[in-house]
Amino acid sequence: MTPQAAIEHQMDCYRRMTCQERLEIGLRLHELACDLAREGIRRQFPNASEDEVDLHLRRRLEMSRR
Image (cartoon, rainbow, N blue to C red; front, side, top):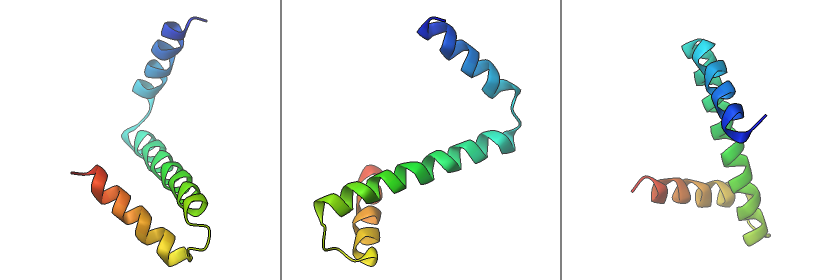
């Protein structure tokens, strides 16, 4: 399967899903992105508490919205 064919197949799968199924996928992807960002923050600030990690994450999310 070519990359383009794979993308078209994936889009067809998304089109057949309900709104709720697509929303659940989006929410899971958001959680995954936040988890990955937290891991990056922990590597950057190894002594940070969980509250500090969450604060850094919130700041990053706020910056991305600007």
